[in-house]
Length: 357
Image 1: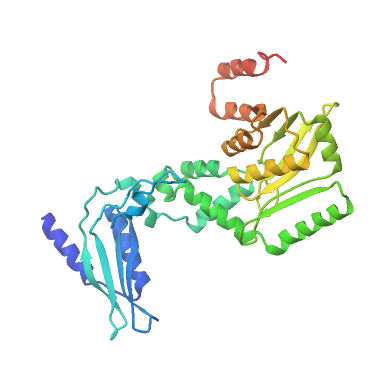
Image 2 (image 1 turned 90 degrees about the horizontal axis):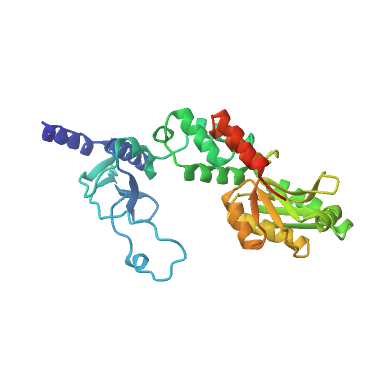
């Protein structure tokens, strides 16, 4: 009975006709989702003028093998990725019928030499992952509210009832936010603030300003501080507090203020920075620029919110400055994750009362 059903399914597929190549791809991708494997575009043929595609081959994502030069490469800057290509023979080939202008199925092989993905994880395969317009709008909304990307992903997971219901990964979310930022930052806006700060620098010789761009001229980072900031850091810069939770600007870019406390127990600002991405490279640049502005003076102690990229950047730029976690952030984690009032009280005593100078 199963063989008869498979034969009927095969016969129905090979008799399909498509209006264009994209329709053929979407059909095969939907079929792959139902069978729990991922697809990718492979071999293509053009007409004699090389102006029109006449044949397209779609294959299982595990078709072929990794090139030997990548497998045996001795000097590797990155940890090699897991080998996923195992020579799977499954493929779906469509060709253009010049008379009708329709695409027909020229070859179809539905045999795999590997285990298929579990049913609940099929939507997380590469060709099936996508962020819907409604999800994109929600991500942008949460981002504007100052919620971090990993927390947005957790919120979406709870809202949809599981990772398999979201149909995208945390990496997809990070990539979307990255591209979204590039789209909304207008070149004129970036140039306006750069011009303004350069004018400040011309008027005040002690005003420090520096910015960083990528290869395409997109603004990646910016730091500035005026004379009073430099004087305050020289006097009160033993302890520096900084984090990037402030995202009140229209572009939702992390604003990173460097702050401390003066002899009147008042908050003083040592400088401000804006970065496009909360990664190690951006924080290393920001810390090096801050140090450059303050004649290479390193703080005695640094307090942050515990961000992993921040921690690694501090160990690179300020290796001799002890890094501590902000008590406010610890308190927030306590309220969010501990639901035993007795345990909360004991933890607060341990954190606030059992410490010497």
